[in-house]
Image (cartoon, rainbow, N blue to C red; front, top):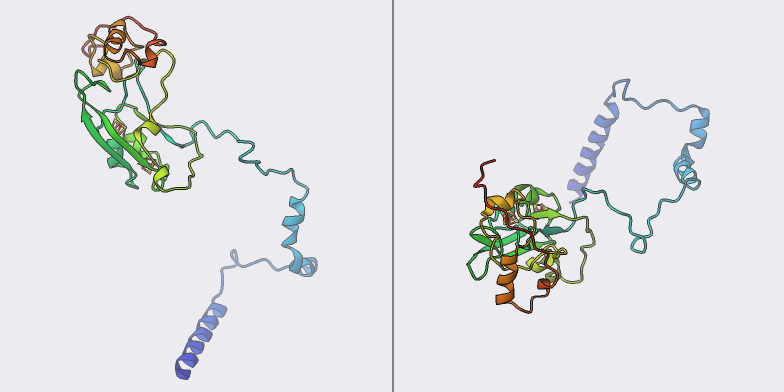
Length: 238
Ligand code: SF4
Ligand code: SF4
């Protein structure tokens, strides 16, 4: 045991000797201190502290005063809707595949004539983001083909439980804006999913409102839906 210790000491001394002998190039060698520099060297570090005492305070009084983030700050995700209230997510899972942290779970469901949630054949039936894993890199929103998934500026995502940090679809769906009609309901008559992607649908139509009135007469958005005229599909010829 004693031998091992003395060998260790010897090796350490050899390493120190090599380091001492190593000569730095002149441009990297530390400048020689003058007499004043040598005098104040032991307390030089306090210079930073003392000079900071006379600078304006930059302490943020969070959470009592919230400083707005930069406009493109990557915060909580949001699943967006079209102007007539249908969801933009088509359940393609590209966001989940793009995620380097494996934080997204998507399970698609089939749209049916009685339950159409998004334009086209499928919608995101299950949508979860695990904020214990998410690193807010934004790769998922870049991968989304319909701009269904975007990121808001909301950054307060702490919570007391692990389960609470797994956000479900209802936590991520964008709120209904004034004039929208809650899904499910049929697509605007005479349109296809391309018309939706191009932004040709500007709000719910009378037919959609009538459909919801017949199937969900208690739907709260019936009272506020602002109808627009249906635009015939151009079949992508523009
Ligand atoms: S921001 Fe990045 S880590 Fe978070 S869910 Fe999207 S791809 Fe995954
Ligand atoms: S959010 Fe976008 S990428 Fe993800 S499943 Fe929905 S449509 Fe696809």
